[in-house]
Image (cartoon, rainbow, N blue to C red; front, side):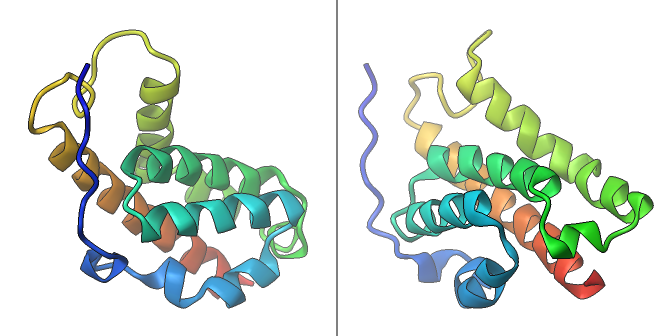
Length: 141
């Protein structure tokens, strides 16, 4: 069994801090389910919990799309589809599904010494994509 070392890096090492810097503003627009997941996600970001970041980011995307909040209800169908069906959003969902619905070994979970670095790269990409999606939605409101 591979044991992962906890990274000594802090959130400041993530280049994209949009979610943390805009926490209060973003939370205002989320429903109760989304708010709870978003809080857990920001805690995972602070502590570099890479798998959790990926899983909760994909979950939050689905919740934002489906939890009937005012700011989502004000978007057109075209806006919703272009945001939530983008290649990037699908990448997060597929990555999350590969983690939680094991079908075969995947990069980052192979038991190699590079696993933690791969998961870090995936989580950085995930944060970037989620930040872009939330930023697009808030600009459209």
